Image (cartoon, rainbow, N blue to C red; front, side, top):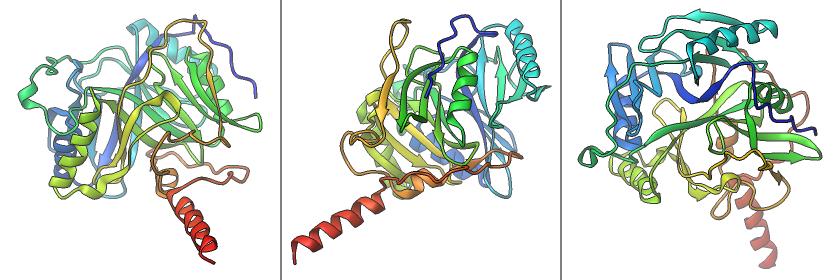
Length: 341
């Protein structure tokens, strides 16, 4: 299981994860969820599109939701590059790899390059966006979880090693990783100085597992859950609150009205210095997914969002057993039954 060496001078300069573009069958229900429960700011809307940003964010949008009458999908994830010149370098890089790269027009974004990585994930690259005032000190207007800023996505892919090698070539470093018998199962990769901008997990894909926003404190996580309950949306809380093993963050996962998964969390550690080695996790050891609390339900692993027009590739091998809420409770029941005999 060779980990790719860091590339400190990549062919072009990605600075951070920037935004996600998803679809919805009901924009009003989506607006209520993301404003009232997640606590995002609605920057702008038109008849068929909602543009949201976090309270700290000055750029026009970090979440775009488009009206779509049938199945919910993800259109793309987005990264920012440092300058306009980096976009031309990115086009050359992707074309030299034989990967799709084309220019598209996107409202409120500067020149935008749409590319597909080796797994097929559609990625928007841009250098600039329209700006708006930050509202992170307008405390009287905070709602729900008061999401501060966009942080990362988790993408499920059938070949984690291939994706990891490719993103490392673009300058992404590994903060933490999971392995089984010398095989990469998951990698946490970053460009900004946090633990992740993108996470790859072995599963059929490419599919969007979740996107995540940071919040300022644990109370914000609880408040999002309380508000969801008060609004009759208590069942959108899918997993947590809890504390992850990797990165050690407090978290909660929620499902929006269309089934897209969003994570609120606080907060990962800082990563800048080049001598810091990736943290390894053995998937067989306890405490990997959760330091305390119950494991996730099976749906957390298997229910994900397809990318528009991108076929899902299955695994070419059998996936190892998962510790889910269902298997955990079944094991507990067997132990109790055996002890009562």
